[in-house]
Length: 88
Image (cartoon, rainbow, N blue to C red):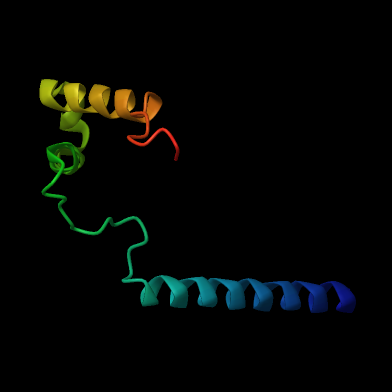
């Protein structure tokens, strides 16, 4: 019984140490790991439209402009443009 309690205590302490380390890491990165930087790329209007759709949340599912933007994004991702210089 004493060995079980000792192992349980060590496990709890290890869990608390890992949890504390993860909280400290997330605090150094700005607090919210899921937040994307608020940077707009003026050279590509698709990026700005993707950010707009992201800000809409679930309402973006019914937005026709967002559907067209996602289609174009998939097209660009799946069919990348060939390199401009054939020797590259």
